Image 1 (cartoon, rainbow, N blue to C red):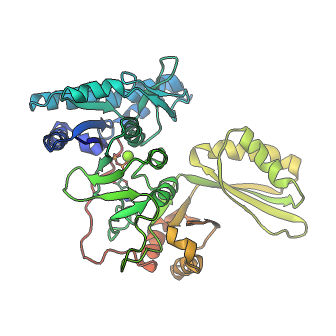
Image 2 (tube, protein in one colour):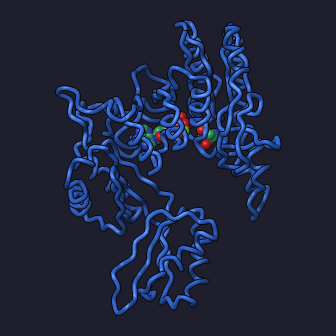
Image 3 (cartoon, protein in one colour):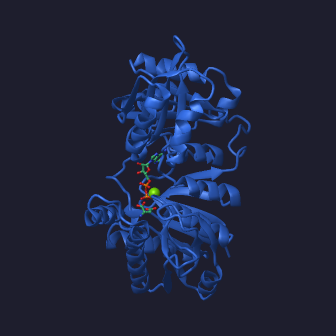
Length: 425
Ligand code: ADP
Ligand code: ASP
Ligand code: MG
C-alpha cells in the first residue's frame, strides 16, 4: 500500500463546495488503495485578511511576532476542521490535527520558522486505522509551546516535510494551475506547462520569485528525495513532476531544453550611493552596517571609478527598503558620498535553465530581446543556471513576454491556460 501526501492551497478550499471537491479527491485516492494525508491552507484570502486585522489592531507599530503567528495560524485551523466535517459527512473516517498536535516542532523564528522535527507516529496510527488524516499547513510549535508559522506559502513546506517524515511515495501539491509553467500564466497566457522540471531549476525559479512552490518546500524535497508533483485541484492531468537532475535530460530524440522558465520578482527595491571614494574596503564599509541592521542584500553592482569616485548599487527586499535607505543616509557623511538614491519601482526578471551550463550566448540573446523592446537594463547578475536583470517595473509584462518568445517557450498548441483571481490562502 502506498502513502500519498496531498496539499490543497487557499483557492482549492475557498468555500464548502470546494472542500467537497477536495474531499472527493482524497476519498478517490483512498479508494484506489492509498493511505492519504491531506495538508490544507487557509481559505482563500484569509491569511491576508488576518494580517490586515493585526496591522489595524497594532496601528503604526508592527504586530508582536508571537501573537501575529498565533493569529495567522487560525486560518489553517478553520480549514482542517471544516474539511474533516465534510469528509465525515461523506462517510469517510477522518481526523484532523493542528501543527502543534502532530508536533511539527520548529525554531522560534516567528513568521519564518523552520521545521526541526515531526512526530509521524500519531499519523501512522490513524492511517493504519483506515482514516484520512488532515493536517494544518503553515503552522508549527516551538519548544516553549508557542505557535509559529513558516512564511507565506508555507503549507507547501508542511506537506513536503510530512511526506519526508512519513516516507511517502509522493507529495502532490494541488493548486489553481495544472502544473509548473514556463512562467506565471497570469502574465504570459501562452506559457506552457512543463512535464518535468529539475529540483535545481525549481529551486532557482522559486527563489527568483515564482510563487507556485515555496522555496523551502523545494529545498526539503531535494534534501530528502521526496517525489514532488504540482497538479490542478480542478482539472484532471499529469501535472508537473519535480525530478532529480538528469531525469529530464536528452533520452533518445528528446533534447534537453535550454531554458526551463522565466521568473520575476516585484518585491525588491534598489539603493544607490553615488560618488563614494573608490578605495579598498569601501564595499565592506557600506554593506557592513546594512548587514548589522539585519537587511538582506541580493544583487550588487559597483561601477568603474571616475576621478577616484564610484557608484555602488544593491537591491534589498521592499519591506526593508526604508531602513536600508536610512542606514545609507547615516553613512553618507562619513564615507564622503555625494548622494544617496533609492528606487522601489523595479522588477527582477530571471531566466533559469540547467541547459545554460553547456550553451554560450544565452545572456546576449536575452539582452537583445530586451533591447528590441526598448527596455533598459539597470543591473545584471548571473550564476551557473540563471541570468537575472533588473528593469523598470513598468516593463514586467513586456519584458517577460519578449523573453518567453525569444527563447521559444510559447505554447504552440493554441490552448491557453485559464487561471482565476489571486489565490493566496
Ligand atoms: P496556492 O494557494 O494553491 O498555494 P499559489 O498562489 O501559492 O497557490 O500558487 C499558484 C500560483 O502561482 C498560480 O496561480 C500562478 O499565478 C503562480 N505562478 C507563478 N509562477 C508560476 C509558474 N512558473 N507556473 C505556474 N504557476 C505560477
Ligand atoms: N495561508 C498561508 C499563506 O497564504 C500559507 C499557504 O497558503 O501556504 O501564505
Ligand atoms: Mg502557495
